[in-house]
Image (cartoon, rainbow, N blue to C red; front, side, top):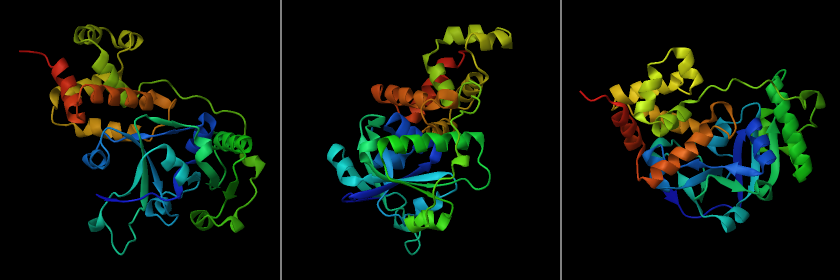
Length: 298
């Protein structure tokens, strides 16, 4: 990892169209915590960050320009006036060949997990439409994005041509076909507990309560809040104390999970990060503390 001075006046943030709709709808960016990998923590410890690219030719932009993705063009000067930021070469020169892997990343840092008033930093939106017939979920997300951009009066361009989208070639943008959008929200998914939510519940649940619930029939366990994932995670931490990578993977996966989504893992992520920072715990120490808590004494 190598840090480069400066931050660009124009930045690009690529995400799914559903996430873009949520950013505009909630009017806030959901930032990622630095905890989870040693590289992230070295870049800017104990902070949250927004990852952007300072050029549209960024490898990260090119690699993630899939159908149903959206690029937000951001006011870098406005962001820099609000929060600190710096350019980062995450992979370093050894991982690049002839510059083709250069992500051209600029990161914005914050002590908070969200950045409000997102629309004030967005100068334009470019969205690549789904290939083929969109699903009910995609139709709903496109409708939400359309309404939000109209309300915020943000210039928005729609594409069916992936090459044009990757270059932000507005001459090849197309009017949005309104048969692709729908105000109807798709059926909600089940409310089962996410993996990171299970780790948080294990941290908060007293040991004696856990084992008392574990002795109950499975149906009663679930009714009283002891999920199958909690049991799985407890067993992992107790009997495999060195297998912290599973917990770290759950931390990493939750970084890309939006608030309010299935499993509530993003909400759990913020609470776990707050616990780790307050108690000065690394991910390994948090995982070990759970294993120590539930490990039966001889």
